Length: 310
Image 1 (tube, rainbow, N blue to C red):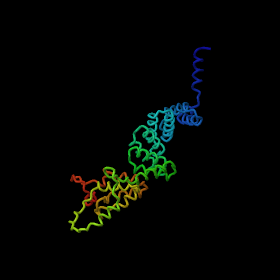
Image 2 (image 1 turned 30 degrees about the horizontal axis):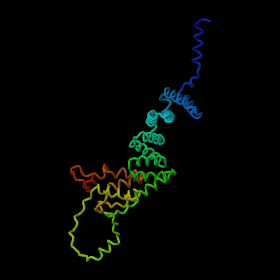
Image 3 (image 1 turned 90 degrees about the vertical axis):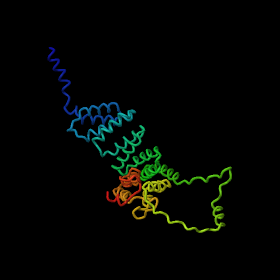
Image 4 (image 1 turned 180 degrees about the horizontal axis):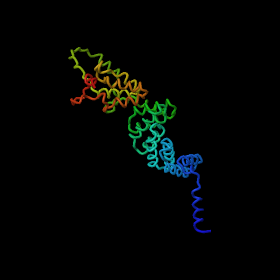
């Protein structure tokens, strides 16, 4: 046999593979099958082959699915950086994938990128309001930052959506927030005076009525609103209860009142199916636009007549 026929025969053996066998879809299906058969190395190779053959006709949905699948294999092998990269590419194509946002958030939290992780957990629960584990993991992130109020609220939500370990955490944080400070001891080891004794002592003294000058009118300050809400939340009350009890500065300008604009914005977020914790964090922080003082003044006094015009 001459060299030329031999070459043609060899070439034929390599080119007689069916057209569909070397396509994105065929490699993706093969990777999924290999993953089900507990062969992660083969699955990873097949997913990679699929991605190398992908073109626009195969669609973004299929590519996103393969990227997220390969991210899972990378994660199991301890390749956090590779998993984050695949998840980010997956989410760039599929922005409504709540599970992928949660998975990326968990990886970010493990890597110490807490703020970014919280952002992903927010996106996860925004896409799936009943995503209990996303609430629980966001609570862990808040707790690591010392934000006990937000952590407690998220643990409560996680508990409500069936994450049982979150129930105990919510109760534990509520108990800590509601605990009263211990009675301080008097100097030199003497026992502190009992409140009843102090009251009796005061009762024996004659009461002298003095005319007190009229208290100056209070000028509402946003920082007083935030401090009052923080005290309420740390006491163990829910965000919603604390906000609902806060006086409206437009109607009752007393210390601890909150700007009407912030109260309205908070209620609007709740009406749009937002959680109490999300709405609270958005509208009752120092950087919130609804409580900002007018730009032309350095004073932090809240002026409703100016804010209402914005």
